Image (tube, rainbow, N blue to C red; front, side):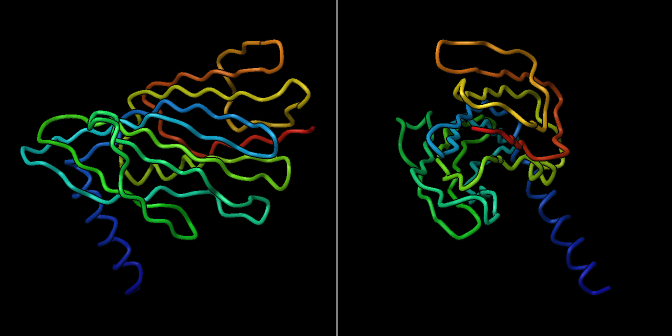
Length: 188
């Protein structure tokens, strides 16, 4: 019972703290290539407070023995002269500092690649639920070589484009609260 009360207090504190900081949109490009899963995207944050916000945010990576090392990580505040942000690694993900002036928005570009030991890739989406509000909108793309065939994908794409050497799937969603992670199972 004591643990449940502590969890409720932590969750309530997080919601109170998050009311002035909103994570409201993301535009992500995913790519599977040469046994790696690449993620490169724009993350949109809004400060609804009349004071500047300085926070550390946690960005998780999938944790499973079928995934290898994450490298080539970067976090850039694209509205602050493309300055790279202070990143701290741990075994489950990274944390980074976010700075947003009063009553404004900030856009951060975050990217990494993760080694794939098997034919599955994953991007963690369900942590969005901790923000307490859905994304206003999201745009996702997934590019993969034509010689691969998809076994399953957790969200059905809205459209597909075929290029000479690859396929590209597209997603656009409004008022989107993810109920599962973005997972791709494929064959080579």
